[in-house]
Image 1 (cartoon, rainbow, N blue to C red):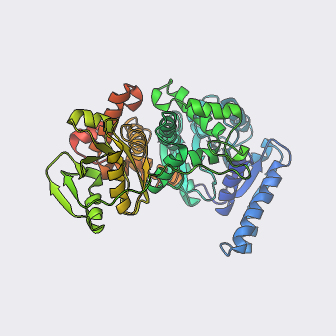
Image 2: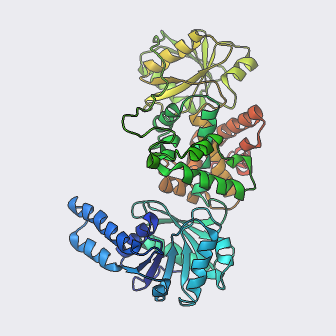
Image 3: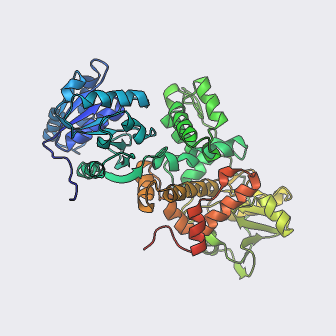
Length: 508
């Protein structure tokens, strides 16, 4: 039998009336359900209902909803004073603090109040759904339903099946999420589920680059926005989320994976949290948000000279788009066989790979070697990062800078490191996504959908891997693993198989 969504005539219970709880309550009420909203603190549920109303009134003033629609939604939300008032609910969603014992106690109490077939959903972002259900008499009724903040706006819902979750229960919640206008994806109950696991490298590799002194936070953020197409750079985003929240999730995933170095927390972030520098909410994080504070600027190169001509030596791989852009800038181009570089004067410019510029120079016997970073679209990217080999002099940087400035790019000069910045972070994201698929957390489509809709990635990490080539991603990781001699950069078994089979992740 095919599962169906919970009937609109059914009562929905929501426990916890903070930002997430009231968002979930609004979503259910907008879908036409009567919602019983409970919070352990007196008056909070009623205040949440008022806040929902004020938010909706703003939409009325903008002509996005009618007053009648707002009135119907608010009429559907009923603040209640105790868990006993949730007895009529066919479906209860908890959005309380991330504490296993508290969640278990809430559902254990509800088992004595609600009907035996009432579905219990936890909105946890990182706690095992299996563990939440383990304390109950009817663990088969428990499922994860992870919304993303703000719940009325964000489309993604992760539906997480614990070991004891009844398949029909998971399917009912999946269909219910669809009927509420959401895009649900299935995930297995593993640390971080899809989004909070796969997203770890976006932050952790940025921290690693910052701690190594490759460049400053502002430059990393600018490159991830302008070259990779992310709405916010990693440090801007962490400051918005809050360093206490971000570090807590990282520690949860790190410890749940038995201190796997891939998820190791940043010492710099731990220092920020210890100092109370939590981001925007405290007035200071990576950046200073206090009155009069000025954010540092990205590190940009001074003006270089436009080259008279260039020679393209072999296939540039993911950077081959540059050949046409160079010609469009009225720079004569000669194409010859070679190892995949652009020659400007005596300087060779190589696309970022698993080797640093210094390592490329050492292996090839060249001196004036510069590497340049990945861009999703070299035509529209406004800036680009380059790094010179330690053996090279500043003329090499000047020649490389002049070329990219002639293509209307601002040039960020960063310290030499394998895979540079954008490609390094993206390679780690693709690898983590591949590993999530490999271990059965979710399928390829679900992983990419989750990352696009849950954290607004411009493209799914596995779709990106298909675009640049799984072999390119593997090259980056193997180079990083060799360079650092750390298991942190080990390549996923699935990634290796895709390269060996010459297959994309998204099979047609």
